[in-house]
Image (cartoon, rainbow, N blue to C red; front, side, top):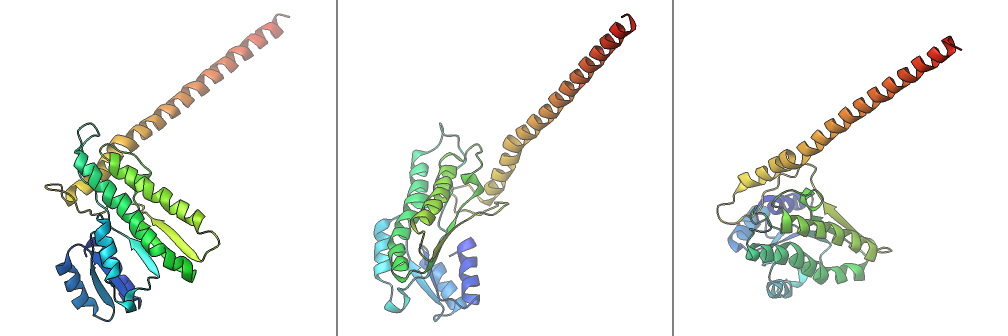
Length: 239
């Protein structure tokens, strides 16, 4: 109902698709329906972190909206930037329930009808945090690594079917999350700054050290070569 999800709904409707928008905030969905049109957008109140809510929402879909050709798993959140030994366990459980279990459960509910029709597309929104580690990412990064591997394994399971699976990751991942308490959009930018300052910089330094080592090594080799050459000339001269 906001951010990426809202933008995806608008784009798909603009491309001529009928879109089911699933989110917790019914008032946001109602506003989006007014904007996009009742014939093109169906608001579905759902909490993806609650499997009962998912079941109930899917059961209440009108028959005209039950055939789902494209599933976009956009729901996900990052809670806090605390180190693993300081993090709130409830935050970890919430991220696991939403980013992993919610995504897996909804996919499992929709996938059979795609297989039956031998047609469909699943788009999972990943993150660079699923590949590149940085301080404070702990469970969030692990959840996005799960999404990446789950997407790859779905592809393996669906080999021979006309169903595509994509794990979408932006090259520069300045994503806006539904963060907890005082954690706001600024912290998302801080994630990127921390990534470069605490991970990339040491790598650059290692690269400089490696270049320095190579220069010293080359210098030593050159010195040894000249020493051997001088010794050879000395023996030739005194032979």
